[in-house]
Amino acid sequence: MASGTKGTGSKVVVWTLLTLLIVGLAGFGATNFGGTISTIGQVGDRDIDVQRYINELRGELNAFSAQTGQNITFAQAQEFGLDQRALQRLVTTVAIENEAGTLGLSAGDEQIRTQILSIQAFQGLNGQFDRESYRFALQQSGQNEAAFEEDLRAEISRSLLQGAVVGGTSAPEIFSEVVFNYIAERRDFTWVNLGLSDLETPIAAPTDADLQAFFDDNNEDFMLPETRQITYVWLTPDMLVDTVTIDDEALQALYDDRFEEFNKPERRLVERLTLGNDAEAAKARLDAGEVTFEELVAERGLNLADIDLGDVTEYDLDDGADEVFALSEAGIVGPIETELGGAIFRVNAILAELETTFEDARPALAEEFALDRARRIIGDEQENIEDLLAGGATLEELADETDMQLRRIDWSIASTDEIAGYAAFRDAAGTTEVGDFAETIELEDGGIFALRLDELIEPRLESFQSAKGRAEAGWRLAETSKALAAQAQSLADQMAAGADFESLGLTPLEQLDATRTSFVPDAPESILETVFDMAPGDIRVVGGGNSAALVRLDTIAGPDPEDTEMATSRDRMEESVAQSVASDILAAYATAILAEAGVSLNQTAINAVHTQFP
Image (cartoon, rainbow, N blue to C red; front, side, top):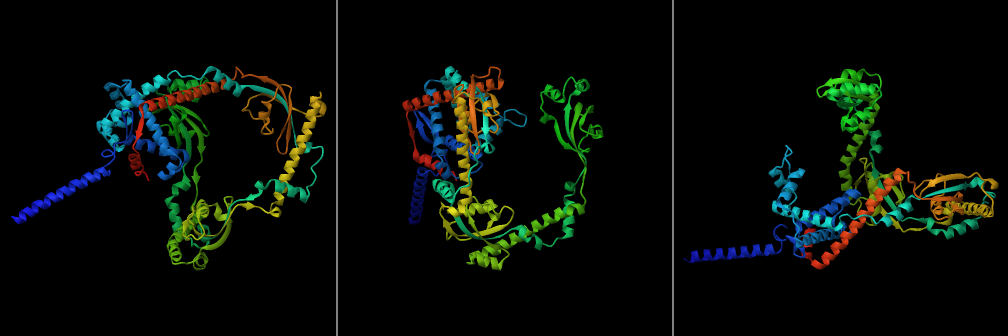
């Protein structure tokens, strides 16, 4: 009896402990987000679903990666504020959904069903809705059917409300008119460019005092970047190729494996337009010059990419091979009866047969073989090199005991010579600190290196003696610019007094219908900015390094009514402005309903979501 009582008591204790453990774990979020943590907050009466926040975050991270071409950690994403952007967007969305619910807007079951049936991801191989595909797709995205359909209903209701808020929004007419006139208005001006050859008095040679003064006044142009004095050892395949024994049997085997690469039959770039029973009539129209091949393609509702067969051999074409390969030059043949019906073929280019013997291919194969063998040697040696480094070997000792070569470099972000041309080296050189343990790092060509940062030299002013040549070049440019501007201003003063270009011995150029986005060849960069700040009859000088322009504004005109390109630009601009106005209206509306409904966020739940991202 005693034994039985003890066993029963033990079971009660065990089950009690298990129950407490399960309750405790549940409280700490041991289950997935769909269980314990289902929301991250509320807007009004509407929950902010945790899975929607996860999806919003993923979308934000994926968009950033697509835009920048690089993946980032979640910590980096937070530094960029991507998590806050995603959260704000979701809160705004839920706010509008909450308002739609308050107003009684809702999508009916039939509309939900129609939407689901039209989603391609839920369709089977026959193009029809497939319930298993539906269930699987939702499972992969972490959703269930009920939640998805509820989200879809909310999305439709939200779209209805958003459409009602911003529907019919257009750009203010006066705003569009002012902006368009600013962009499209035109100027006619006459101008002449003065260059070095036009200087009345050549620039005298500078004195050392001139150069020193220029250097002192422009110290920022003579700053040296941060420099890292680095010792490194490296080994590349190019360093070992001369030591590799070339195996003729291996080269022959390599040639045999890639025989088709070195020997290709004649190929032709071919397009095939299938026309069926219309092929004869179409070819007659082509021959008569009534239509082009491209127009025939367009008549079939196709584009050239749809009918492109690429580069084909005679054996690739089941039908039409004889006629296509009978052409001695690019052209059109047909109609030809194919298994798809009558067709016209166009040959765009003839690629001659390629025959490369083993002897002809041998030099390239030998180089490739040697480089590949050298990479293998380096790969085999890398483990030994890493062991030496781990054992405390210095880079100098490493160079003595292996094939690695010892070098030194004063590296900055502007360095590009030899090893500095490798991205892997630049990354390591820019991040290594004094005292860091040297390790082998792979180069893009299969080589390896290890480096040591000996000294970090902060940005500093270059010495005058070292910079003297560049200081002279800068001084000459500045003096030339001043002299040309002064000479041009003298001419401008004479024109203001009644002279014209011709009486001053100048041969001017006319620029007609220039807009703010026009390009004026050989003119100073700021010439258009200056011209659009002038009144008719004004004469200005526009400086620009080794030149100076003398400009007279002749006429001002509005946008060209015959310019269809400008009309298209106006339509695009008005559309863009309308979208911007609509976005501002919707943002203001969302802010108002957020303030009315109130928002509460569960930071603990939000932090729990963040821990799921690497």
